[in-house]
Length: 224
Image (cartoon, rainbow, N blue to C red):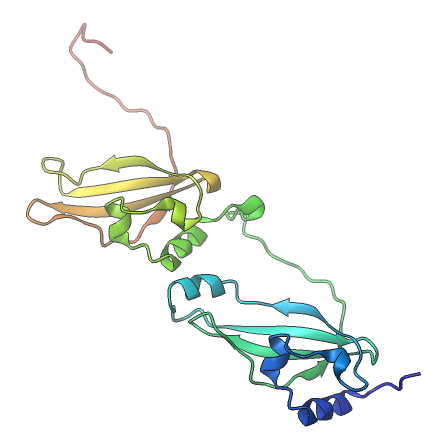
């Protein structure tokens, strides 16, 4: 019967074999080929949800994230954790050597925003705005309707309202987009000057359609 290895003995073995944190994280270690180790499996992992997007954008500062992996050495009944950093270019770095951990079962309470609809694949307005930013879509792109919506992954998007932006329609202009799959309306405001065309410097924001009554004054007998 194989004797159990302590975690410190395990670390010494990794050191003697020249196994690095990067090797472990990138699954380059054949655990059962190492003397006395046996089966090692990953039981938990935390990734950076924005890795794919920042990679597509070739780097976005502020989206660095701590990531980790937890492994179980079944034959010796110990767990160890490996921590790394996913940087603003979507690349993972694993420099620290693993350390021992143990599973603890506990009850947690989550607080979910009543204004957020994340179930069923729906995004909130904030999540849509973040997606647009990550895809490199500017306010000018939205104002000029220069967006390939299929590339954004946001589903069906329609121009719900458009006002101004042309000669004789006043200086203020705006557009409202409806993100049908998420039931979200976003409005972007702009400014029209005949010598420069429309400018769209303001950030988009969420709006809601609202029905209202108006009073108009017609000549007697005029069509209603």
